[in-house]
Length: 321
Image (cartoon, rainbow, N blue to C red):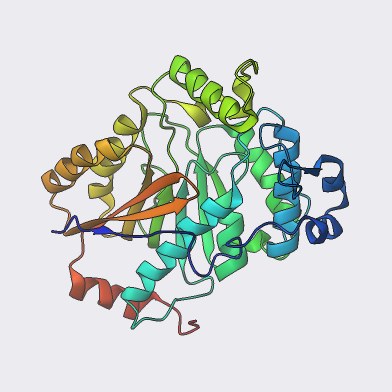
């Protein structure tokens, strides 16, 4: 077993968002963005990141310009994710797959990924299908979110055959009824709700809005950050990830790697303990940094190094990067 921390200082080297946004170029890809572009105190072009409409418009422009994802739209109440950080998760998992594959990133639809809690935005599947041409099964407990995500996927012919959406009808489970007996995934991913209650979510949204607007009198709107199931669950991320860890044992032969984002570093020792209890062969942390924000990918596997390489040899496509 290992719990070594990998030091990551900035966005992944393959992340196309490492440089400042070129708003004039983005406006050409998505003209409606122009309405929200302003000059900041440094006289640079930017948007008001505390304005949900502006953030959604920026996301539409980024997806159109960099990923050829069109007709991307979300109801105003849904979570609108930051694209750069979501892309980073995929790039680092691609590196992890390459480690088992003689340093080569496996591409194409033979690489199957399970996205737990895809949300209405379906962002990981959209990005992963566009960047690496991977196949995704994406689940969510909300039928409404599944329908919204389906509309986005079906509106994009270039990736619609790469993404399958499925509703998790039993909220007590994460993998059960989603992973079938003959399913094999190169990895699972998840961005779990990390608040433990509506009160915590409101406080988090309030802090986020105030930091972005620099206006301490800004009125907090909960829908700035998303719907209830996107923001919190009983017990927060500790409960959710621990449940995921325990369930993963039942599907240890169906997945090469399991993974999840971890918001709070102090929770890691709890997850390490749970992983040792279920005899995970290997687990590790990848630390990602975007600006002042630090996010961690926790991943684990029930295969030793030799078995991981055998999995890659048997299941990865020859189409590699």
